[in-house]
Amino acid sequence: MKFLMLFADNFEDVEAIATLDVLKRGGEEITCASIMGRLNVQTKCGNILTVDSLIEDVIDLKSYDCLIIPGGPGSFRIMPNVPIVTELIHTFVKNDKVVASICAAPHLVGKLGYFKDRLYTVHPGFEGEIIGGTYLRDKGVVVDGKFITAKSMYYSIEFGLAIYEFFHGYEKKEALRKACQGEK
Image 1 (cartoon, rainbow, N blue to C red):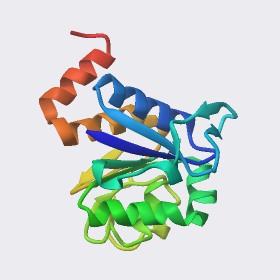
Image 2: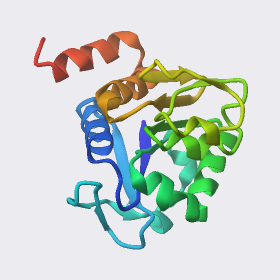
Image 3: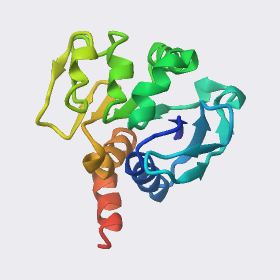
Image 4: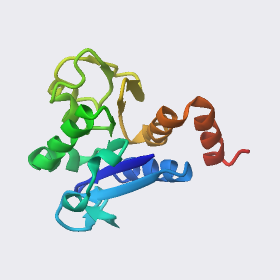
C-alpha cells in the first residue's frame, strides 16, 4: 500500500509520528508531504521535522491508497487556507480511496459534506463544522466506509492500527499490535 501524509506547521507531534511509526512497522510505504513550500515543518511542540517531499512535487496521486491528515493547530489554522488540501480530499474521495484524519483534521473532510450519513469522531469543539453525519463523541477511533477518524492524540496508535487493519485485516493488525507491544 502507498500512503500520503500531509504536513503543515503546528501539526500535532504524536498524531503524526505515532501513526507513521505504526504503519512503517507494518511495512507500509508513506510519503510525507509538506504544504508549506519547504521540506522542514515545525511541530506543535516546536520540533523540526524534515519530510520527504513538497506536495506540489507529489506525482501520480492515483497510485496512493490513502490520504492521512494529522491534527493540531496546523489543521485548523493553516490547512483550511491552502486550496491543495481541499483538492486532495476531493481527489481521494472521488477516486474511492481512504481518507484518514485525526483530532481536528476530520473537520477538513466533514465540512465538505463527506460525513453525511456516516459515523465519525473529531476533537470536541469541531463537530459543529461538519455537515451531516453522526458524531460519536465517546469513540476514540471510527471507521465508516473509506473514512477513518480519530478523536485526539491519545488515540494515535489505535488510529494507525485502524488504518493498517483496513488494508490488511484484523489478524494482521493484531499481529502488528503485539509487535508494537513487544509481544510475539
